[in-house]
Image (cartoon, rainbow, N blue to C red; front, top):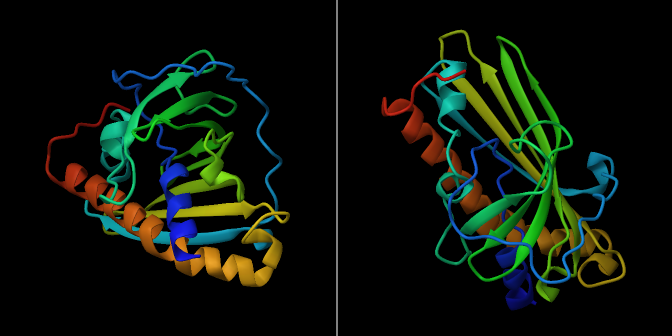
Length: 219
């Protein structure tokens, strides 16, 4: 069971960052079909995990730290594959609501991603996205994943980043058919372990980049 859940983690990675396309090779696999994303269920039906970090920089500079190719933004543990590249499936850069991209992973699999919500004002930034259409059979227990970033300006001039990732499990396959027990197994066997580690390391990378002085406000 543990090995099965561990295998799932190798095919569900995508940060959803609003970033510029990378130069790495990524192409639509033979027979690829760009399908509509599944309807996103209410939060209480999903298995979720959240991570927070405080970046000691203003909101605009904190956001600029994510403006880089996806494969460079994602900090993945050695147990998980990295991002090899991405291909836009719609006009323009990924990030505007409705924009979609194909993400290629280093294990040879692909997944599809669509931006759902992108809102920004002087106090906050919200970005929500959905990931689906996994190509490997290892992801058969998962219907889709949905992520959300919320950047909030704090009174002291720093920025809080809250990242939530949630999954809809297939209720006709293991572990989803076990109901709440299956959700628990998925959470403790994967989401709160390898995936949580990836989320924490990615947020630490954003913090380091933003606070290093290497990024500039381009917004």
